[in-house]
Image 1 (spheres, rainbow, N blue to C red):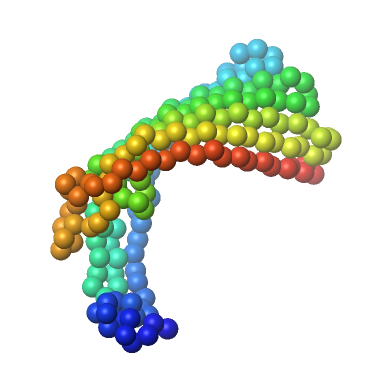
Image 2 (cartoon, rainbow, N blue to C red):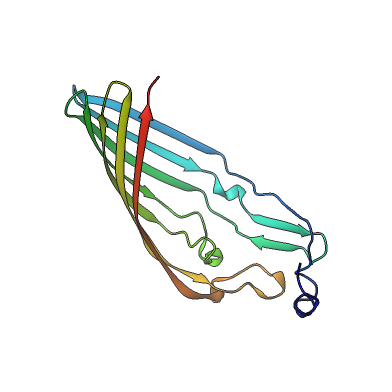
Length: 185
């Protein structure tokens, strides 16, 4: 429960209340190809197109507080992925891949919430069959995202944001590790 003094300081917007919001998810199309280049070498590639332009705004309907509209105006995006899978034996496979993806968020809507930018990723991994029924896979991915200018505050009066509000620079990169242990029945 929020104390009366805190709630009063925020015009009762912190009061317990219900909200309604919907988040439109974009349509996607993906076309991929796999080519067995040699008995032990599989090459893969795909192209993905996402219709993010359907994501124009998020309307939040508060029960008690004033309603809120976040303007997003996303752009359609595309991504290219390539990969290779080399089977050294029936028990051991080495994998590598990469992708290039462009950003959906236009300059005026970049915030700390999602400081998305154009990015590149590279991945390496390996798989080993420990037994006929147990498989172990592990991977490492490096993610490099371009720096992006963005805003740290909302436009006054609920107006649509502009790049004039962009006073921050967002940097992002990542080192990701993953592993799976699979049991086949």
